[in-house]
Length: 360
Image (tube, rainbow, N blue to C red):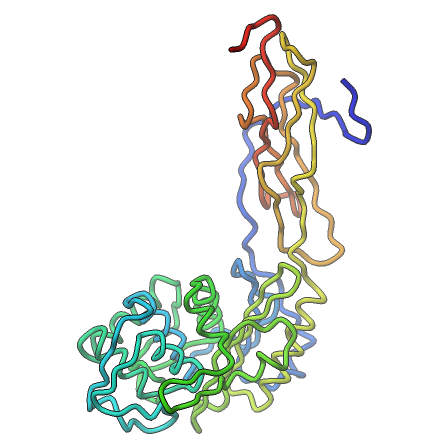
């Protein structure tokens, strides 16, 4: 049975190879160091690979970017419509505010949105007290979460980000946090809201990149005099997602847009295996001479633009009938720089009965 345009692959199964998904850091784009005004910065791909870094592991004050962790912990500890009452001690906290009043009742998601959009310090305190009984207990949860995410140089002392002894993080750690945040669909939805009305109050998202930067899908601003301007954002274009963090950066909006443009121009999440690929495997003793196999799913790999991967296709020289539809036929291993970077199972697209066997 011939199939024009389809390549017949007859390969012996290979063994003894070690397969690891590519996750190594990519060298920093040093030429940008002097052009980016941030004291610390990082651009990280969704798998944790860094494509740009500048003093990325230097602990710094992080102001209200702290609220990314506050929001993530709050999302994990609450239900969206869970009613939350504002305690008196949570009102009137200095800095940015939702202007909450004692005894006011909002949903958890309204408070989390206020936390992210207008950076309400009173919302942060309210969530901490309501969900854990005290600020200290909630901060404990924040530090536990930081440890679980591998944020090795971070320590939280409060849920709002006002300057405090021992309250710090790094650009790299905040990038890890933002990646985790954006994997949570509830967080991602709340973070992208442009504006929100709660009762008589109207709140606008402080993250200007949502309207300025092509593909921006979320972020959090922060500022204190000691910390300077801090910004964490996430951007996605053509199946490729990056997060960017700048700390103590007087030109943060422009720096984020420049860094994203550079990153997307240099790297891509390339489709390296498509589900339309077909392979013919000879069938011994079957009603048909060949069984068609195809990748179970598509595979994309993060890689520099213009770089071509290599492939190892593991398929049997032949198979015996009967062949079961959906059964494993082999696999494709994709190599970058001679090392395995990903793999996809090959499955039979339809069954092949044994020659002369009755079916009923």
